[in-house]
Length: 369
Image (cartoon, rainbow, N blue to C red; front, side, top):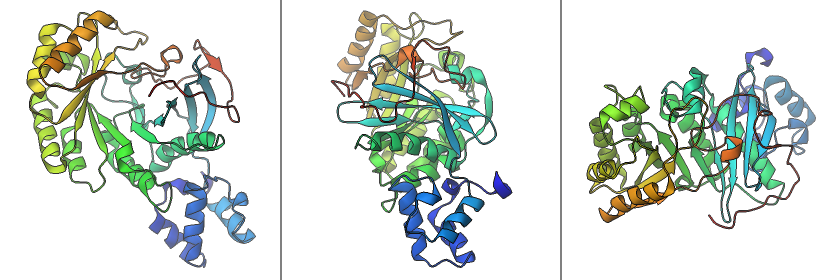
């Protein structure tokens, strides 16, 4: 980085104000720059035409305006899912996904390079953990996709922290990104349109319950018993037993009065029996919650296969019969390895997909969603 200065997107608005005051700029420049970055989605100071030339030059010298660079992209056959490979300043790479629905434009973004949770059915978990992303690296993934949909006269509607990494293990940067996206003077996305996923980091869940912005919480459960869950999510074990996770979730609901989503990847003959469905229903009974059932997405090296649809439907029926709301998640972008658990920082050319730049192309919305 130039002069070891962070990217412009790492700065909070007060920090930007301090910088501008230090170099002798008037206070109103803060709002101008902020709106260029987060409202107009401009990441080149030379294009901030209402700034004086000397300030444009100083910004270009002092800050990085491209903390992530999209170097490759794959597009699903139906052109409703776009996965980007982003290179960071230190050469590391992460993936993020744009999903198009009839009424929604959703980005699934990453919070870490790799992941330390070690989920046996998740490609990212098999990478191991490299490092946390900075707030600027998290934010710029979204801004890259925001510029793309803006070129079509559209805007992003939803963000899900469900990409690479465990968001609550990088809590400070993730929450700073949430605040940045929510800021009504900038990106201005409603908090209820953002979802943070976790495998069950108890302290993070409890901290999230105390925050002022009502973001959504999703807990990746995947098993109703500790023994099986530890096999699927090795870090779960004694560190995050189900009883402690559920206690934290109940506390979260009591404080926020917000519904919690539970993610459950259905694996054939592993966690998809009707007895396990009943155990899950018993575990969740009485909670303000919803279950997202996800037939397992294929990943290299995983020994498990997705549950066949008839068995998945029967599993869901047990939940609904017990009063637990449950839906089967529509699988998106599976053939380009863009589904839940499929993200892996790598060259995308080897994937069975269409590799192309899409800026300027008309995006095709889904018929449903």
